[in-house]
Image (cartoon, rainbow, N blue to C red; front, side, top):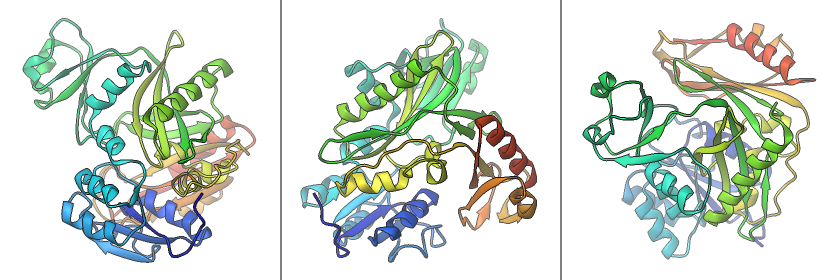
Length: 377
C-alpha cells in the first residue's frame, strides 16, 4: 500500500475538464499534482501545483514531464505511449499501463481484444481503405481505428451509393445493431487487484452532434441485464489487468444481448453524476485505484440526470453563459462549468447534474436547464 505522502508527485497528461475534476478531488487528499497540456489556458491551469505548457503527444515533452513525477495518469488517450513505456521502464508508475492506453487508441485492437477474451461485441472486420468494404451487408457502421472522439470518426453507411463518402483510412466495419439502449458501466481496479463498479447508467445521444447529451441513474433496465453488464465490465478490467478507472460503453439489443461498444481507461463523461449522486465520485475512485488505496463503496445516493452543456451551434468565440439564473431555479441543479475559453458548436463546455426523487423528475429538470442555459459568444 502507498502511504499518502505529500511529496509523491502525481502527473496528469491532459488539462481538460476531466483533469480539472480529478484535481478538485486530489486537493481533498492533499496530493501534489502536475499537469501537462498544450493549451496554456487549459481548465486545469490554476488548480494544479505545477502546470507544464507542452504537448502530451510529443515524446520529449512527455519524458521531461514524466521525469518530475512519481505516478503518471491520463485524462485523454491520445498521448505519446512510447514515452510512457520508457518512463515505466525507468521505474515510474504509469496507470493505466501504457499497453492499455495504446490498445484504446486503436479501435481495431480493442475489438480484437474482446474476441480473444470471449467478451461480447458486435460482429466486425477490419479494412485499410474504403475499397475493402464488402458490398453485401448494408447498413453498416464504419469507425476509424485511430483519432476518433465524441462521435467524430464514425459513419453509418446505408447503401452502396454512400460508399463514396466512406473514410479512406484503416477502419473497423461493424454490423448495424438493433440497439434498444446505450449504457455505461464504470469500474475500477487498484494494484492489489480489488475491483469495484458503479451502477449502470442509461445514456441518450444528441443526434446532431453524435455524442452523449443526457444520462440518468439508476438505470431502467431489468436487474438481470444490469448485473450482466457489470459482470462484463469487471471481466474486462480483470482481463486487462488494468490499474485505474475504466468506462465501458455498451449496447443493449432489442433481444436483450449486451455488446461492448468501446472503452476509455480514465474518468469519463458517463460518470460525472457520481460527484453528487453516489457514495464516491469516479474521480476519487480513480485516485484511490492508482494510489493503491482501498476502493470506496459506489452505491447510488439519489436518482440523478446529467446533461452536457454544449456550445450553441452557430457560435464560435469567447464563451458567454446565458440564462444561468433561470437554470439554477429549476431544482437541485449542480452546475459544473469547465472554464474553456472558447466555445464552438457542440463543444462540451460544462455539465449539470440534477438530483431528484425519481429519474423522470431529474430528466425533466435537466431538459429545463438545457433550454434555459445557452453558451454563446
